[in-house]
Image 1 (cartoon, rainbow, N blue to C red):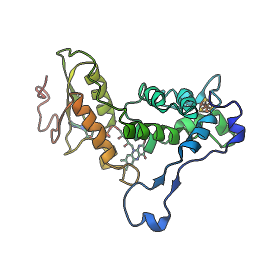
Image 2 (image 1 turned 180 degrees about the vertical axis):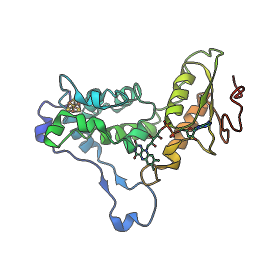
Image 3 (image 1 turned 45 degrees about the vertical axis):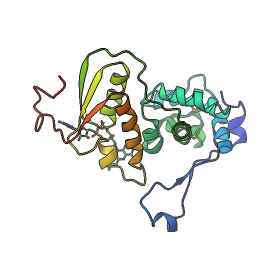
Length: 228
Ligand SMILES: Cc1cc2nc3c(=O)[nH]c(=O)nc-3n(C[C@H](O)[C@H](O)[C@H](O)COP(=O)(O)OP(=O)(O)OC[C@H]3O[C@@H](n4cnc5c(N)ncnc54)[C@H](O)[C@@H]3O)c2cc1C
Ligand code: SF4
C-alpha cells in the first residue's frame, strides 16, 4: 500500500523539462525522468484507499495502487507485469493520457495526487530497457483468422489480444504506417514514433500481420479483406 505516512512525508514530483533554449533545437521528447529513488518515494505516497478512486478514473482499469506499492518496494518487474495485465500499451498512455486517474485520486482533494502517470511511464520504459517485454506466443494456434480494420491504438490493442489468444490476425490500415492518430496527430515531442515501431515489432513477432496502404471498402473490398 505504499507507505502509510508517505503522502505526508514526500511532496508530489513529476518529471522536469529540458530548458526552452535546448528544446527549440530539436523535435524530440523533452521530459527528464525522475531517479529510481524519487520514483520509489512517489510510489510511497499512494494510500491504497479502501475505495481507490483512481480505478474509477482510469479508462483501462489499471490496477494502480498495486503497482505504486511495487515501485515503492523496488519490485519493478512485478510492477510491469501488473501494469501489462490491464494495459497493452502503457508507453502510450504513460506519455499522452490526460490522466483522469490523477484527477480522481483521493490526494487530489489537496491538488497533490499521486504521480500515477509518471510512475506508469517509468515502469514500462524500465521493462523495455531490461528486456522484460518479450513477444508472447505461449498460446496454441487456434487456426482462426481475424481481420482488424484500422491500425490505431484501439485496433492494435485488439489485434495483440487476439494474436495472444492464438488467432491469426491481419491489421488493415489505410495509411502507410500503423499508429492512427498517435502517429499522424500527436507530435514527436510528446510521443516519439519509435515508441510505436517498438511495439509493432513485438506484435509482428507475435504473429500479427500488418497490411498498410489497405483501405477497406475502397482499395480492399469489404467482401474479401484478404484473410477472411
Ligand atoms: C492532434 C491530436 C492530438 C492528440 N493528442 C492526444 C493526447 O495528448 N493524449 C491523448 O490521450 N490523446 C490524444 N489524441 C487522441 C488520440 O490520438 C486518439 O484518441 C486515438 O488515436 C484514438 O485511437 P483509435 O484507435 O480509436 O482511432 P485512430 O487513432 O483514429 O485510428 C483509426 C485507424 O483506422 C484507420 N482506418 C479507418 N478506416 C479505415 C478503413 N476503412 N480501412 C483501413 N484503415 C482504416 C485510420 O487510418 C487510423 O489509422 C490526439 C489526437 C489528435 C488528432
Ligand atoms: S486514489 Fe490515489 S492514493 Fe488512493 S489508491 Fe489510488 S493512487 Fe493511491
